Length: 188
Length: 391
Image (cartoon, rainbow over all chains, first blue to last red; front, side):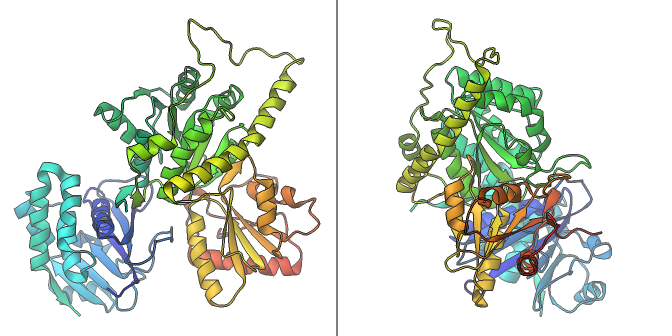
């Protein structure tokens, strides 16, 4: 990430999968590193299972002043592979932007579904979450994938926010995030 | 340097109320204010804040409980939004008229119907004339800082009036951002214990808010008006003291890049920050534009406002509420009124935008500025323009 560059990340998930929590954790990690960051959900009532959005802005130099949803993200993170068929997750993606997806499918399949050329990253977050957390909740796992793909914050900066958020469940989430970091594959 | 923490603004307000050492919180949860009072309930239940938390059955009761609490001299806090603020309406007048220093955070929200939980300033404008001191904030740090200031202003013996601290619902209340918290000792020094001069006490009976026939009512109301106007001096002093102690400075009318600006945009609340980024962009293109914002909404800062806009040719006011069948934007209506008698004044253009939580994007503010200049040059406008609405 270039210095003083504003990075805008949009999360796509379903109500209950923890997209909002992911956004919060990343912003808190960035702030703990002395950066400026902002995280917020798509405002309004939440419905379990329905497509939801969450947003993160990070700037290493300047306070963030924009108070509007992110419509032209640098990075899109998709927590649920099923969303690809019902939401245009790459909508408004900046030139040179990246989509990071929780999926077992090969890159070619993702490209066919996205109908747009962009950098891609993939990881079987559902599989990792089932094995490390015992539940298919992929938010902390996908934070690991985001860090691998963008290095927007340091892996260790997440430890404190995860401990604070998850208490006794933190360790499992820390492991899930670490495994995703190791297993995420990138494609230019 | 004190470390910044990443925290949801609502939670940060709860932390600020804890640092302010509130004695009583009486509140009813309503979106988008809920996280504020939830966090306070948690702090009280966990023993981190030694206060009474009164979970009431409605906002009308919340404010009524606050009256009683403030009247016995307890430091009193509540929070609400939208319909909740409207349900409190009649009790708000009582709080100010009885000179009760309640502090209330309002997570500004649209009004029904149709049902909208999202933000705008319809709720604020409906309680404009309730006699409360009203402050607007633009980011989480400003809300936290102004919670401390609000208690000090409200409880100042020369003021003794309730204070609303406004923050945009969702656009501020639900955002995680960096916030600095002062040490407890610094807050304690800035905010002395509440010493309400005539507290209700069984041993020393006093009468509050009693019956007023025509022979006394106008005097009571005039006294209230004189008192609210006079509070401005104390508000200014408090912000000055705050600046000395905390290094962050507040004023009734805030200006951003207004030097030599021919065109000024006027906003209130968190959208002002988006507007600043647009001013930066246009300044970069060599255009002489600037931004002014009301931080103090009541008492209305006439002198500071006139001073801030006197050299501009065009003043474009963006309201986030609608005065139906009237002048459009309530803020613009007051702005026009404040400038009417001035010999030298800018042409005023009125926009209403961002209703019911709709974003005003950077592109949106740029369009508003360009369109405002065009209207000002043509020299004519209907009462107002609605911006960004489908026909």
